Image (cartoon, rainbow over all chains, first blue to last red; front, side, top):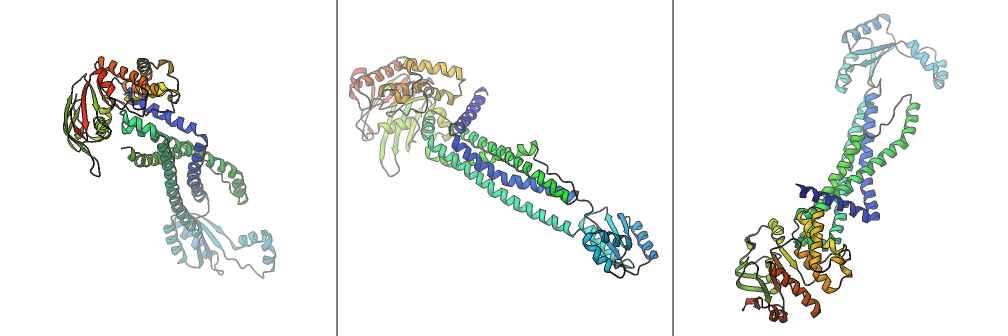
Length: 299
Length: 217
């Protein structure tokens, strides 16, 4: 047990020494790995933020119900009753006068509104259903469209659906990107380790000759690959963090312009650890493949 | 200790380096493998060290039949052998002491104990004062002595050498031979492949004489 532990410690120490002894190579490899992990990592955080944006945006899942122009108070009362009975969620009545007033308040529209002989706007209801599933909304829309004196029902969730579809597509693209970069990372480690095996051919040959097991010879390379990958992962986390910090202010300003408050959330400790772990695993995988192939010629 | 029965080695391509050899080396013997160059001396050493595998017959070293050995068992067989080569196979990226430490690291010895034993091995071959030197700074004879220190630091039961004096002047060669004789005296089985006849006249060891892959004496 003690021997096992001390051999692992020696292998880890030797991996550190190898990283340290060729600083330029190490920095370049770390940059390549770091950047390869940054792009999917950044994409992941971005998507995470966008998903939050989609969930938080209130008043998005609305149904607008427009009455016929000739609808009177009694018709409106009827619709109110029906909405109450359907118990669909919150709803609000917007009389045509209020709608006109709102339009007049808008600078560009004021002139046009003033030139109109009479109010062309219908009375309307804005419904915010409790069940905001796209299918449920569609059923509700159809039901309301069948009510008397209802001219038009508009589902304002179309863009939510589009947004959802976009997120799904982006997610898929992100997975493909991550796959490609993961393969790249494995390849980079593969090559680094291959060069190391070549550089240490003498040591490997001697060690074999005097009774080193495969595990003894491979161990330092595994540690090296995993260590390099983990450091690359940490570098990637740092880059993502830096990019988000730079973006935080402009995003806040943009959100304010749209009358919302939205702040990017930066990766937490778990996400940083995950990035390092993914890097370590991919580095180990590259080392494993490389060592298996490169050591064949020492048999 | 080392028993060969009807041992043959044919290399890919058909060249037959050893033909139907049988011999027995008992524990504590000093044995010289001699013969002209190309007689099969190196091949026999490589078979004993399980660097090569026999194509026919059996070779038993330390009770292990090397022809039937699993690949994963080879390292543990080699740890009981101390090996010395004509080209010492030293590592020039570390000190003399670190070269001798390598077998002990492989065996997983605690560092303090390893350093103690490595220093003792260096002392035995007269290189303790040069323990910090890089092997490249050592003379040919010193390099070979360093290789012997590395070979014996693990206290092997068999010391195996292939032309250990091939590149040395006669004085250095005599030193090396003297060191082998000392290990023989403390009970280590010593097997040396050499074409140097002067050794045989001086130490009268048991001799395995090879000629074109056959055992002639």
